[in-house]
Image (tube, rainbow, N blue to C red):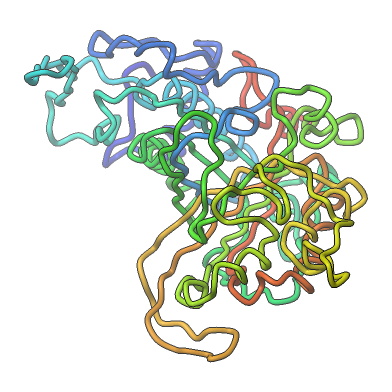
Length: 445
């Protein structure tokens, strides 16, 4: 199968079978390069793909994200395993700044130098009637710390009561069907999915290119159900980014450099099935913000709603962002300094029996559309379709996000400005070593 790629006369299943053969021969390391493949870029731009845990979970947060949920269209379990083999090879290559599939021998390198820029390789197929091995928009770009993180939704194991792939017995007890929370207005086109893929990188084109290549490989096996792009602002050093409400977002998180904290709050332990030990559960929520409504509020009211000072990020009554929340402090009239229904109070570990999870949120802006506000004055018209793409990893969603958000959904002051319109829960298996593929222990069981 060396040098073969899908074309107008080759089915995707035939291609995946060929990829599986290539994987066995190459030990699932980066596939053998053709003479046209560029050398890997500087190591400083590369996040490791292989390892005990999947990348993109405790990896220092990148600036751009592209998330996609796929629905499987095949009825064969072996097709899914073949797809995951192909995706593993592709993701490992992409993380190193290579093309997702090896370029053919017939592709000729043409060195192009631009004034004041480093030379880079452009590849043109010798036969322009063929289907290219790569869509090409990331050629010449570094990997920009690309990570690709895979997850399995509840519907992979059981969908409409049917065990399509004989995997129901392997479904972890923590991979529950998400409850419907107070105020949810979930849109089917932004909810659920059999398999999730999140690409994160410091360059938007690199992240999108990665997902685009995996979607090409998946044709005839899986189709895109929904997608969401996200961004973070450029910021100096380790400064906490601000969300579209103008407040710092992510101040309180388990420290990702502390193995004790990540073992407690992020990584699945012996309570999970073998294929999930060292993995994590991903919850995503597409949260639309009523920015027009929010922008009409006085700064003091905004701070009372969040429970922090807007400009410093400090808890109300404190001076610095990382000062501890004083949930017992009262003002001169005996009222709590941080209101009872402030966002930070309801989300705090101290008010949730110590529950925590690792947040990796991104802002999103998808233009404008027609909407009706949920609160007075109930204005209707074109408003920003923008907000927060909430991303959280945890050891167990039942004692993590679900426990915390059940109360927030009922009482959080911020609910008058936000609406949860999309949702998903996915089991992200442990990492993979060369010679294996993502989720292999699940499919070998």
